[in-house]
Image: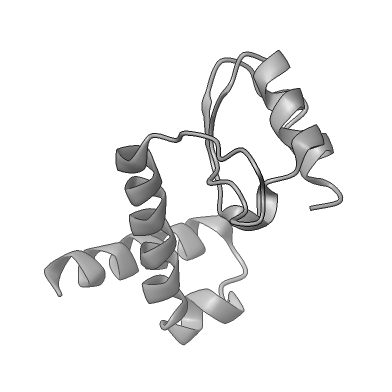
Length: 101
């Protein structure tokens, strides 16, 4: 969370999806000033809950699940490949195997 503002500093006019851990007022305000649509659910302890697009939030969850499935392939998780081309080839193969699942 400490470097999220720096990492997203050059992002403009985009949807930014994240989980509740990124519900910091400073980060949300920064993203809104940059013209971004924030899809981060509010922390349950907040007095005012922010409305989010539930469909986009579900899409974020699907992408997160894809990364979890890809990490099960040890070769991808540990990055055995020395060349970027070989790593990308195994990443494509892993995506195909997840899709065929």
